Image (cartoon, rainbow, N blue to C red; front, side):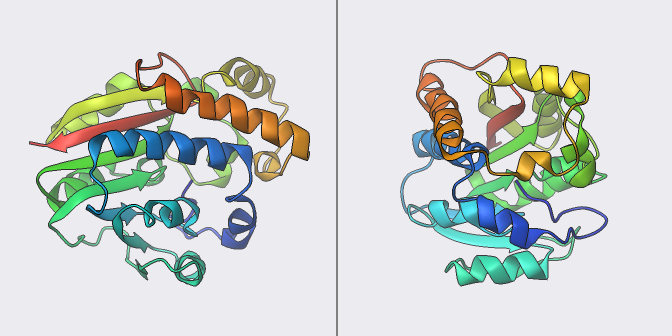
Length: 241
């Protein structure tokens, strides 16, 4: 989850970096993303991670790929560098380097006013036939305190995200909703408005954190066969035409 892209740079990178290695949401999302990415990208490929934040996921990607990372937050980039990541600051709207075999933007598109412009810049960063992999929050009706805290502009439906990426020049290779097993209770919490700002950042008790991680990581296996029809987030893989 990138919290430092948008009109202003968020000032809680330290809080995120303290939980992004162990919190069930980050661990489950990492497992899913890596499982999907391995099916589309050979080991050692050159990958640009846009909006790397403090580098919790980027650190894992760098174990299998040749990763460069950018983020507008100097604070987040400093933490990412401490983790051994090749990261640098890049102002919002600036052009990316080109010639990458893959480019990723994990929970980034929802932070910017012009998501089509960003998607087109992701396209320009790729070599012909290169892959893009993005994640975004799903379903506008799930809008909640974390969206406001993270300065989100929108949540997406899969059809809308697919259309956006097609307009940017991508052909869809794979797409799915995820975090589906926990979708019903999360829907209830959101609709009842019982979550306060910042609550979703808190680490649950160890036993519950383990259980939620296990439930979430089941989806990494499920997506080998199916595209999941609902969930709180969307994962999209596209190919540069």
